[in-house]
Amino acid sequence: MQRILIWDLPTRVFHWTLASCFAVAWFTSEGDRWLAIHVFAGYLMLGLAGFRLAWGFVGSHFSRFSNFWFSPKVALRYVRDVLQRRAERYIGHNPAGSAAIYLLLVMVLALGASGVLALGGDEQHGIAADWFSFDQIQLIKQVHVLLAKVMMLVVVGHVTGVVAESLLHRENLAHSMLHGYKVAPAHTPRARSKASVAFVMLLVMIGFCGWWFAYAVDRQINSQAWHGAPKAETAEAPHVRFVGKVLPDHTLWRKECKVCHTPFYPALLPARSWERVMAGQNEHFEPNNDLEMDPQTVQAVLKFLVDNAADHHFTEAAYKIDRSVPTTETPLRITETPYWIGKHRDISDAVWKSPRVKRKSNCAACHSDADAGTFEDGAMQLPKSEP
Image (cartoon, rainbow, N blue to C red):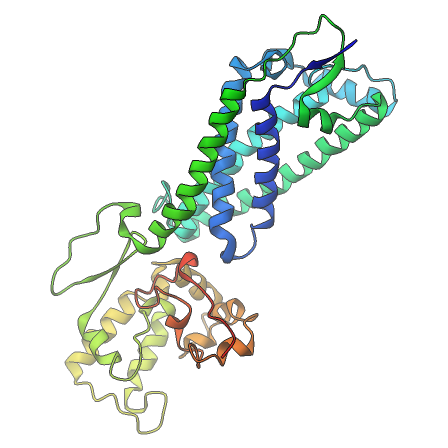
């Protein structure tokens, strides 16, 4: 029996990086603030899965699929033997561990695919942008969440199995995956370190990390290039450009609203709300506050508001606002909608009272794209609460 290198360096880098990425993705799955990190971890997991599929054919002896291909029947029998404390010791992956590896690879690919689709439909980012409507993407989002929970169960089962076998055979399997060595017969095939491959892996991952956080995220927030060239723009129908979205704009609407306040994009309220707002223009939220619009202007502005209201689900915020408002209600203020209330529930009074915010209707204080009306997650930054 000798101390022999079993797990080559690329396999170990893959193993611990994938575990770290899943942990990061799991803990950043709630809340829009961590979306960029969550998506980064998801993309990296997809890349790692692609590498492992290739490495399963060209890697060292114990990293190749041909070395740990067992039937489900054999895997179940091995689990039974472990429970009875009479399982055979394997130098490489045991039957139950091999089943977990294959299942995890499938889960990563399914999670990644559903995540890309959900990102495209819900956030309108990535290669799947505009493939689905907000209504259609809800099922895919539910599938994505379900797959994540199933994968967590598989991970817990895998870790439990590692602990059980480590105790059974009196060897630290997790530690072996760190340094790569196990005690084995002298004739056991030895793995090659493959340090050059691992070095390239690390360079690619570091490069992707730098590109993502220094360029890709900023590109999503500040440029229309994410989805290609914008639509044609004319003097009569200018467009707002933001994150590749091209939302209709209206010069007359902006001109009239800017007299008193920052224009609120139509997608923030249902059409019936805008109709009610324009119907009461002689007392616009305050007694004797007449907007003084002529009938032609009222008609033009109202048409723009109704055509681009939340009912049409042009943006994620529009979809969620529309879904949150009961059809029997007609809110006149954006801050009265259940979705807005829920999203801003945890913001402290100190933030609301800060000189930069002052009032809840000052959307631009936190949303750099408020003027565009897109309200992307990455364009939101709470100001410091200190005065």
